[in-house]
Image (tube, rainbow, N blue to C red):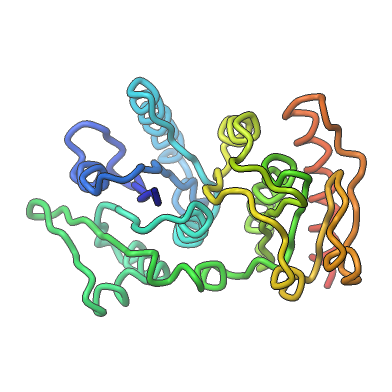
Length: 276
């Protein structure tokens, strides 16, 4: 079932949080998200917020839930994350400061509301913004600053290509690059790797929600770069003139070894893209 996102911003409570209650009332899986936005986390306030985030993480963990901490501009990272996990809605407590109005406008919330979507009020000063991502999912990556023209492929589309995608998208955003990546499998398995997802969460990266899928002729047509990570590509991809191989990523040394090898490749790739 497609999830909804609970985007924690100013109100970092679990108990008596109208935004979180609304997200849970959707009767869908809830992805709890906080974004470390460098425009906001400055000076003495940063330490206070970090303590509050740690407390929020502990409260959620006590209930068997997980807080996903993203890094970058909030409006870009939340929209990108919603696209990656296939979310149908984003819930966030309304913030009426000028900065917040501009930020939420970039997510597209006001435009969605004018098209018949709803703003749920709770109390005098607190509202709930519900931006229905399904309406913009096809263009989410473009709105966030790029589209998925980098394709990482591993044998099962469940671990190495997922790690590469998560790190590429994070580091590209931090460098201000528009490029974005996606993951595919030469012979995809049914579900994503549990150990890869656990490792990404522990690293503080956004965890994708889409299941492994094969690399299609459409993927090849849209791609500018295709990287085979320890696998053989199907003919339509290998003959495209866009493919390269990363054959030095270890198969059986655990998440950390794979991540470290993949991250080195990703950083070299980003260095090349930055020189364009």
